Length: 251
Length: 59
Image 1 (cartoon, each protein chain N blue to C red):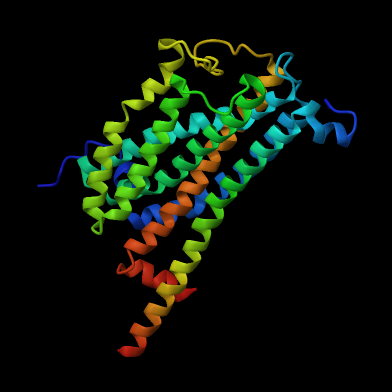
Image 2 (spheres, rainbow over the protein chains, first blue to last red):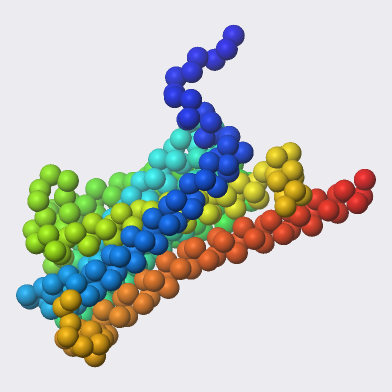
């Protein structure tokens, strides 16, 4: 008896490493090009053309890196935890590999957010670091990424490593709403959210439009970096598959 | 354009050090995230090509 298909076809197709390798070779140049254009435009716009803040002056321009990287650090964490969960539930190897590919990129984003935040804090608050709820929960996010990466490298067997790290990242998911609401729950030095889906930004349009460009650029950048890591992982793990041999020996 | 001269742009009203440091390090980290997997793919392809060559010779 044929198994009933409960998910759309593309979901099953993505489960095939070969199909995934082929589709990412088409998507990769698109996202790489978009990331390059959006980030270049956003950086030039943010540094040269956006007006300076009336209180913070030009140090405010750090926002164009700080906010997108902080949002990405959390989005990537959710992506990593969810694909880890999909890997456990459907025994999907590609989902495991996506989760594996996410960890170092997410850690880089958390690092960039913390580093730019510290540099921004110096001229604005007069201190590189304060043990404020937002900053501390973000630091915990970075450590969660480090924990996931360490767990991967500590385990030899790919399937066991995938299961263990998926559970660790799912448990760590509790930190995401803490980061998000930290500025509301506690009296923090950190300012409240710059972007929300429901409210209009508190900044003039000349300030937040380049920020939006940077944010979309960062998402495209993540897609690019993730697909590169994913493709390397597919090649490494599928080296005994016929299609890999055919592809490598042909070129 | 918010700046009149290049010197103004680099100086950033006294905040140049903070702005350029954060943009510089961030761009470096982003580039590493592209270059490092790119090099790994090239390395994997090379070692697989060698492996398949060895196997075909051994047959």
